[in-house]
Length: 212
Image 1: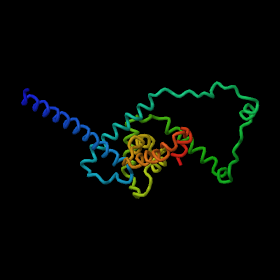
Image 2: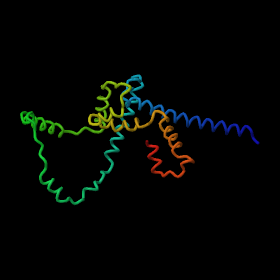
Image 3: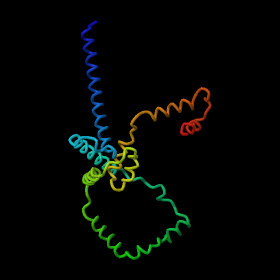
Image 4: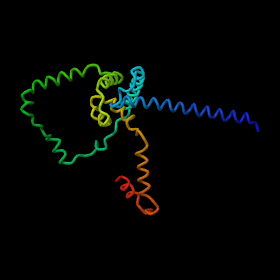
């Protein structure tokens, strides 16, 4: 048996494995740094020089995510072709009118003018997806950080109208659990709920017990 050849093959395999793991570790580090900037609690923790490249990657990811969302075919409404009954037709025929308050009546002309000005302003050139993402990033960078005890997912949900593209992108990063402890707790709970002593428990009942 050629020992040198065997040792050389083992060494090559270890080098290849180390290279693959280093690539995975590099991609993992990039993902973690991007997730840090997408977390409004820790977005100012990275150095400015290091954060510049990460902001660029987040911009490209947000543009790609928004572009993919635009290119998706529209979801057909199953109720679109449904025939309305008499009650619904009466509701459509006589829509409910909203009573204006005294303040709205007082400033009715000014409100109408504001709506017309806003419509004429938005009727101009529509910014591209890249410009929208860049504007959202500028706004997000200027926003102050939130306390560490506040929920970042709820914070992004509250910003879904102001920062729609970044809010959608945040789901990609913030959905990843920080540790495997919650999933391990679920498996432990499932082990107590489904055992040899309770082998006749129905799947529906097991799901209810684990959920509780």
